[in-house]
Amino acid sequence: MKDKLIPSLKVMERLKDKVIWAKSNQGGTTRTEIQFKGGSLKLGWAQTPSTFASMSRRVVICDDIDRW
Image (cartoon, rainbow, N blue to C red):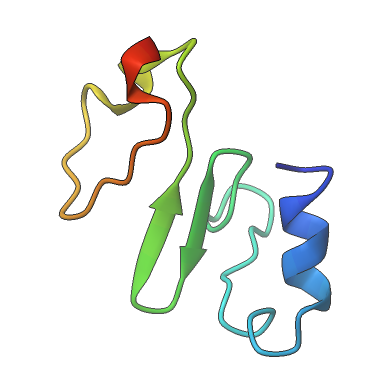
């Protein structure tokens, strides 16, 4: 994410101003969560199913769910 997604968001004219970029420990976009005005995107992967165990989400999109 830090090598491809974050740099891509920073150069996309339509998205870069919508993302809340982290400033030290004040919250905002992190390595696994992208915060933007109106919501957030939390990323996880099959090796760590506990990533989402303690969170509630209105919409969840899963890929390769047979590995969860």
